[in-house]
Image (tube, rainbow, N blue to C red; front, side, top):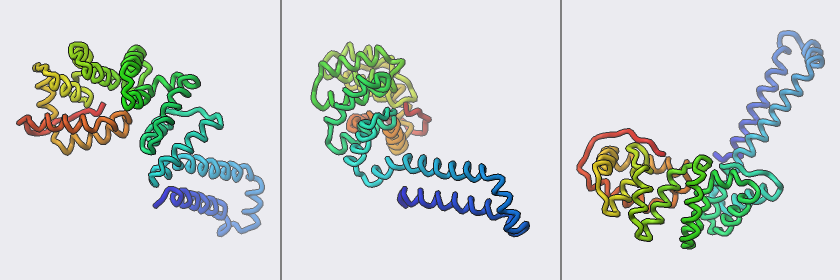
Length: 273
């Protein structure tokens, strides 16, 4: 069932409820009393009508994005978001994440770059909060110096940045690609948390760089006990919340292979941060 059908059914239910309340006294007290009563209580009808209209508007606009997503119309979604922005409406975090996803899936990376520049000027706090997303074009275009500069700035402002631990992990990855493994190690070791995905990938990256420690081994054993299916499910949930990790599937697959080399068995609880 599409979202437009849901909107229609929702409004039919509200209309039926409205008629039920309006006609309820008729069977007992008759039309004359009912009409006289509602003529004196007319403001309740206005309030109810207002609530129905407001609910319809909220419901419609809430699911408008979902209609584009359900149809996988990424260019349509991107166009809709651009139109909202051009009419002077301030974007929120959800809209920014949708813009970035739609931009990449419709191969309109330039639109993501334009949003980066736009928010930096007009909504700097939102730009900073979602700053990790705007590093993606820098990765793709191999703008290594600018990428490292941007990630370092995000870490300086970490209290204002969503998922700053992932920004720190990305900076470590970028630095390690330049064979500056000692600097990368200094960034990754504080992220070695037992129950978080960023902690797991930090342990994996350190291991790939040739570092060994009891801490890395402990994290590896604990996550190996989770099992591949549960871990893949948690990664999927993580991608829904932390859009940036959509682009780390290759790293995650390599990490799974690393875990599968462990002989540990059993179950373990975990946290998707």
